[in-house]
Amino acid sequence: MTLIARHGPAWTYIDYHQFLLMKPDQQDYVPEEAGRLLSTTGEGVLVHTGIANGNVAVHIEIHDHQPPLDDADWEEVAEASTKVEHGPLMVRCLTADPPALPMLTPAGPGTYRLRAHARGRDIAYDGCVSRSPEVYLIQIWPAPRAQTDRPVRQRPAPPRTPRRGVATPALFRDR
Image 1: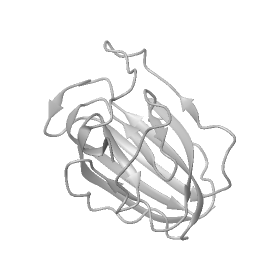
Image 2: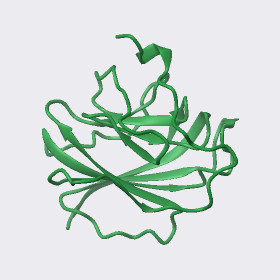
Image 3: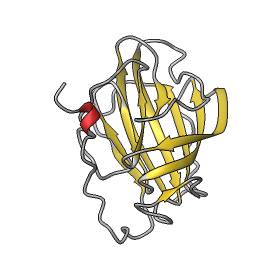
Image 4: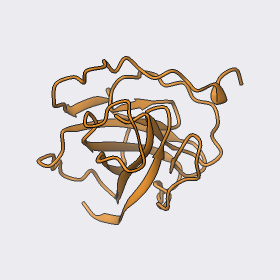
């Protein structure tokens, strides 16, 4: 396993409880399953946050093979697969410019596995804060599509407001 690149933290603007790992020009998306740390969209992944609006710290690691799992400092860890048919994946925001992070798919088109680590999602749940204490680490590597997307580690107890999913913003509906 070789670490190709490590970047961050980059303050990433959150709107509607999420940031995206998608192609730069991808517009439409419908989460296949909301309410977890990760939701797949076909050619992308949504990362669901605790805060509704504001900035969170995002770290990126790009690997050439699956990295070992080190979840000691993280409250939640989840994995998902995504297929990139053309164009690179990048960290994107719904209503703001993307953060200063690199493209996530240096190996080009193919199938990738993502592992998201999160800490602090319940500290300011549903809040609007300029800089949240939430922290995310996204690891990505080329890999065949896994049979299932799965939470690897979940804690703490569910938040006061259940995460039942986030409505698709009007900006992306009816296209």
